[in-house]
Image (cartoon, rainbow, N blue to C red; front, side):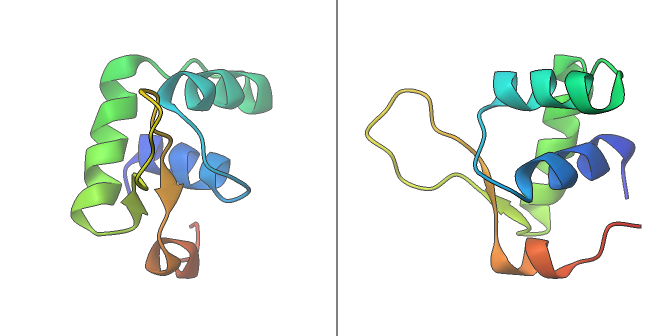
Length: 76
C-alpha cells in the first residue's frame, strides 16, 4: 500500500476530513509533512480501490470518508 494511502486511512478512520485537514492531522500525529502531490496520489490510490469516497454535500468543501470496504482492510 502506498505510504500516503496508509496515512490517509489512519486519519480517516475516525471521521470525515477535507484535504487540508488531513495534511494538518498527519503532521500533528506523526511529525511528517504530507505534501499535496503525495496526498492526492494516496487519495487516487484509495479511490480506485473503492476504499474512499466523497459523500454528497452542499458545501464547496467536500470531505473524504472511508467506505465500508476501506474500513475493513487492515492497515499493514
